[in-house]
Length: 289
Ligand SMILES: NC(=O)c1ccc[n+]([C@@H]2O[C@H](COP(=O)([O-])OP(=O)(O)OC[C@H]3O[C@@H](n4cnc5c(N)ncnc54)[C@H](OP(=O)(O)O)[C@@H]3O)[C@@H](O)[C@H]2O)c1
Image (cartoon, rainbow, N blue to C red; front, side):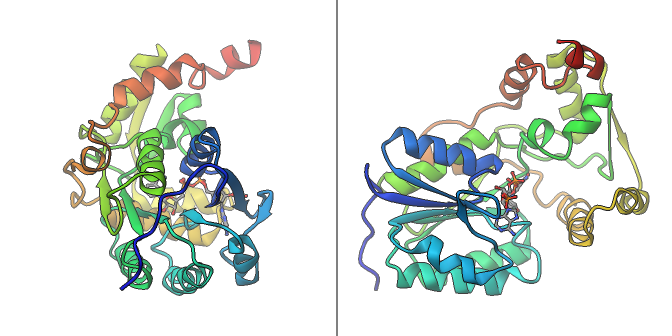
């Protein structure tokens, strides 16, 4: 039986793997604000860390007290289970107390990685998330939206998109608070939206006539090939749209409430906030400003 872990406190060091990413950046900012020393790790981070180069893992872990871990590109890729097993083993050997792993909802392979992770230390925490709101303004969906049309191989299946600020809040609570040890928080937003719904709400917030178009998966993959998107990302994208987005995740969960005692942020609030930055303004309008 492991000793209970103590919460991360000011002056201690947290390793953030994927510190420049959508959730990692926010977790790093919140922890810095609490006086925690943040070790920002990724291939281009101030601490070099590459999931494809295990020799970078141990130096990044050395002397850290806790960690927030995002695996790239996704826990569903075949290399992930072995990487998570070895990383978790190293983290335990280096006596890390609190460790939080970000995972994806409805992905059998990711759930296998969660088991491997918590098999090393039962008291570590998993945040199993639905699709992020911020894919629309910080991720792959941004350039097409700026041009006016988002075309994806997605139909009428609804998804409870979540705000990554909620994910960061849950991760920080699990690292610094009490009562989160050994939990799996399956987190979603408060509302189901199809991609067409999401684009409609973004258009309304941005004051633009944006459209969503459903395209066949085959054609979408060929388009990505033409743009020289790496094969692993094309395969992953197909898996996410054709397998995971089949309705299995079309329900909301109470993970944010269980972790934080409050409701998750609504998509409309996210859309209003992001629209106010001008990120979805028409290309011409943005380059003129
Ligand atoms: N996006 C979603 O809707 C969603 C939903 C549920 C779960 N997730 C999970 O969230 C995680 C991150 O996804 P994201 O969309 O947030 O990505 P993201 O914002 O693009 O961030 C990826 C981060 O990981 C780093 N990275 C990329 N390749 C790496 C490698 N080989 N080794 C170490 N670091 C690497 C990147 O920095 P460098 O380029 O400097 O390495 C970056 O900091 C993934 O595990 C994904 O499955 C995402």
